Image (cartoon, rainbow, N blue to C red):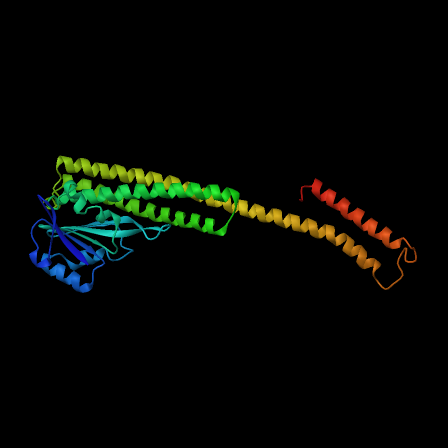
Length: 316
């Protein structure tokens, strides 16, 4: 699926592929092979550039080829209400067009809709690129804050009860932060490389940095730095929390085992005495009419004494 959009004085207009004009933005989402070949033929963009973002394991990078440049970054993606992940987003800047490619509909590209047409222009390809990167960075920060809030809520629940579901939720959040950490570091390297392009002639005709664009790119870098610092800090906190709760669970298990061992010892005393006096052989006090009461009393006294001794040794 793809849409071809272009900024106009009245907003954003949508075009067909046959009507492709200079200054258009081609937004590609989960395309079929036939659609990719059609777009490659119409725009003269390399097919490898168009398919790069369709591999979930693709690394963030910048590639330049003739009059085209591919900027590949990882963007945050909410798969479900509790599952955060990252997806590659390919941004291709050609002489006359800008193209975005992604496997799934996402909040980064969706933000540049007809309702926000006043804040971006498909003709200003470099600024549009930086605006997409800035939106990605702010979305990372938004999701990180949501994860932090959910972590605090889970911590409060886990202080009261150690339920498996809450521990699994904590593990899911830890995985999300791990994905974010890797992706943010890669994206930061890409933005720094874009910043270095301003002092070289490489791709200068494709990425033209004006003063406002440089300020926007620096804002992007600052946002990524902040996101990296936050995600690293809370990854350490979450790792520590998992270790602490694992220790608490182990300690609680030890307490239960100590209690059961103590109960077993106490119950073993009357059981042993009863077993000895229940043998089919002569035993002390066998003919005494108070023998049963006496032996039972002795067994109970020994059990109570043993229980008191175990309690003093904090076995309960």
